[in-house]
Amino acid sequence: MNVWPKERTAILVIHGIGEQNPFETLDAFAGTFWNVLEDLNEGSFFPGQHRAVDRGGWVQNYISIRRNGGKNSAIDLYEYYWAHKVQRQATFSDIVSWLVDTSEGARKFYAENEQIAEKYERDKVVAFEDKKFKRHWYLRYLGPLMRIVTILPAAVPKKLSWLLAPLVNWFQRKSIDYIGDVVVYTTTDIKSRFFEIRKQILDGAAAELLALLQDKRYAKVIVAGHSLGSVIGYDALNRMNHAVNLHQVKPALARKVKGFVTFGSPLDKVAFFFREHTPDDQYLRRQILTHYHSFKAKPLTEQENPKELGNPFKDYFEHVHWMNFWDRADLVSGSLDFYRVDENVEFTMGVKGIAAHLAYWEFRAMYEMVAKKLSMST
Image 1: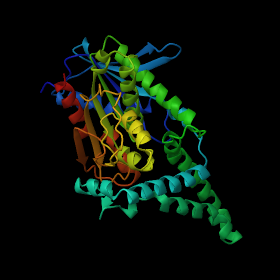
Image 2 (image 1 turned 90 degrees about the horizontal axis):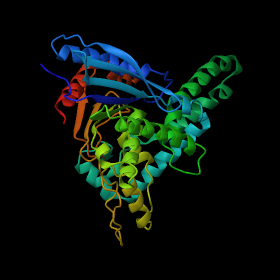
Image 3 (image 1 turned 90 degrees about the vertical axis):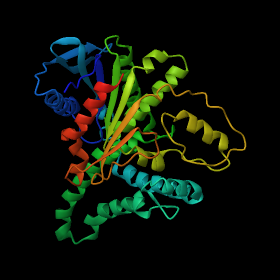
């Protein structure tokens, strides 16, 4: 079997939440992908090299895999590392408030817009049932639970509090390290102290994507994102679409993006929990927000607008083939029904809990599908 792209290809991998270290993402993705490529090509040996490129003030390291030593058919794998930008920026109190506020906002929106809930229920979106947002999807119950955990040491006899305090501290640290990343990045309020951090993360992702598109060595560019990294990857592609529409980037560069791979992605949950919801009477603002976040997105509302605005953004990335991989045991992931995804692929990886969210990195079936699609795309 000949599974290899015909032209030199760059793959940009974006990590998700948690205590990430530089090059861990590159190691995890490239290691499994490399082995799968060799197996798909009848056990061929493909040499690899550690390479580096100047990014105007800092050095970007990447791994280059070649077939038969041919530089024109190399697959180059890059990572976008952003964990240092968000480390310990959110407090435990921020997380609790965020859980309560965002879930309540989503609940109110869909209670006031039953026709949207009914539509998504017809489309078999699992978050809806009986024309309502399912109660077990509400994050608001997690917020009060976390508050209870925090006050437990003070609520129990002193003889036991010394045992509980370390556990509570550990729970808070882990919550900050993982959920805190989501709190910071999903902030859309420009007045929030987190907004500038979010902007820095997105600016970095968009800059790295643009650098790969401008690199004349590459005919194809693929963006791959795990967990929150899929949200960052989506936003970077959406940002690049704005740049093409505003004549900052040539349309020919947009055509180099051939694929978007998401795994363990919470993009649907981000859509119905964190995307800005507008009141009925703010129909002009609602249309502006819809146009602004329009890369392969389905409308969150079917509300009629008294006055219609034309969309200034043509979708120059509509051609991008989007593959989304998910597992029911991974509660973060799901079928992405709020977007025009080309392939929603459900796996059963055989693990549960947090392990299910991390298992994609070593799940060979996912890499096999990506490799085969990559060899076919033009």
